[in-house]
Length: 266
Image (tube, rainbow, N blue to C red; front, side, top):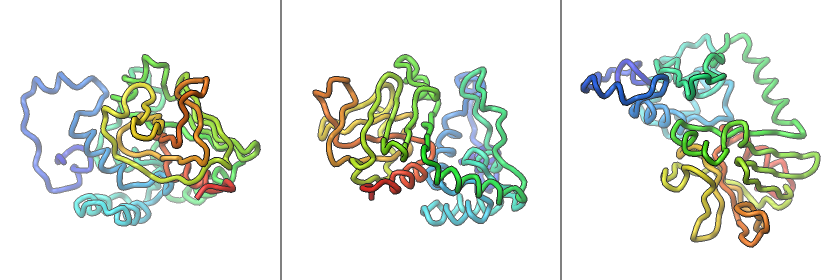
């Protein structure tokens, strides 16, 4: 982890030495390879369900997730008068750059932190969302997966998981592919990752071992949803059925909590 960028900026670490021509290989607005690794390491130790979160909650989560000592020390140096809305807010507070995934990325100017006195309102809003009859979870895209998925019509606007408690239905959409089943068919869920990139980039992937289906938009973390009865998904007729589906949503813990509200999920 480098000093001066990523959360390395809050650690006593040296700068990398590299040839200047290598900078030209990183697209404008995109993170370089080391920054991507640093941010992924940060995200791996911060559960999506803790946000919005202040410094104390972020540090506590990192410790609970067995984060490296140097990362925990860096998190302890975060400002104590701000509330972080997501991992990106923590990343930027540690000195990381904001990634612009496309030239017209609509999210690039979104706030990632708020004043501490608004934390109560945000927490109340989050609790209300968690109790909503219909909950929708977007996918977390990294740049490589987003570019690889685009030819298959998979994008942030065409990929989501909906937990509809009113109708008792779980629906996962991934571009032209979809899975829909009763919430009562959900046996249990578990957090999974990281994954091999070759098994996640591009269109949906089907395991040769057990026919499990994967809708992936990053190689870091996701939710594996196991079913009592296999479901169709990779093709519309149902000749191939899947005993489980893995989805790399942004709020892994939130989706697991939503499914835990259903009658059968554990």
